Image (cartoon, rainbow, N blue to C red; front, side, top):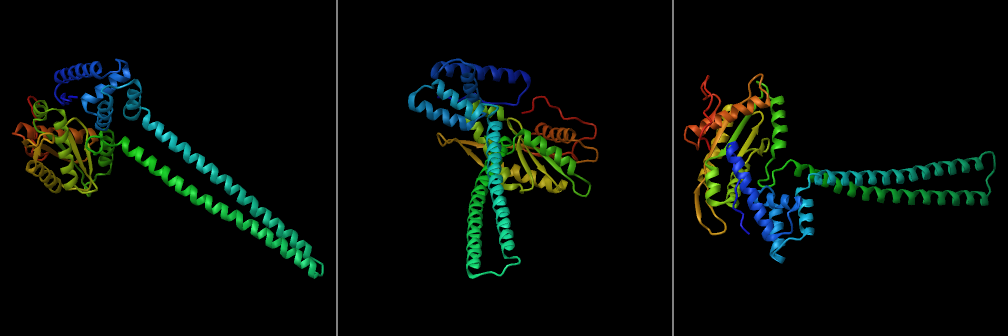
Length: 364
């Protein structure tokens, strides 16, 4: 099954042409592999050829390898697992309901424990009354001690039950907490590269700007893969994905854990660096750029060397009055300036002409 249609970040005309090409390829695959042209089937095949859900693509290939075609049940399963917009909210709702159920169970056991404790207190009071103003006989002392022992044993057993139930609930709640955290992270992660997705990038950029100050400057680095459209067209979409994963891997290798690393466009990445000076940010950008350039890309299916990959980077340092939009625009302008000046370089906003705006035509 051929996946040859790539993604680009070109102009609107190119985007339209690409979307029509994706649609044609999706329709062709529906005819070849089925099961029908229902909206869900079209959504699955369109996502397949566009490459937005690599895990779904792997699952789809396994299904077609078995029978050669997809059934309606296969389509329903793929859509529910990877494309249904409500799947994350449903998972969160299920986990939340389970947490509430666990809490209700704990409260029930606590109520029983409190009732047992109250009953124990009442029993002690009754025994104390029996002793008031009377001379205890051996028989009465024996009866009181026997009642006290029985009541104490009952309370001890109840407490053991409570302790066991609390331990079990703790394990259950910890498992549910992990499920909720995994769901939250999935909603913020780009499935192809494992970096933050656009939503997380936008939220983090806002927080970066809010937390920046002259004493703790913040920097934004925008990264774009050079000539990615041509590379994608020549070698195909799967190899293009390999390029994106390579860039993401290098970013993770060379950027500290305080930074937020994101893929927020087709071949566009970002590094958000809190409490980082211009000099340090430029050094990070250059380290990533030279490290990407030093890697040789090899096509996995054939072992063919595809040569070197280069990237262009723009560095913007937070200024008083900056918003998330203005900081991103300035970093973008720097990146486009790097493209215009020959690609495979880093430009920071101190290098930009005071009056100039980068020429965005013919930049890729």
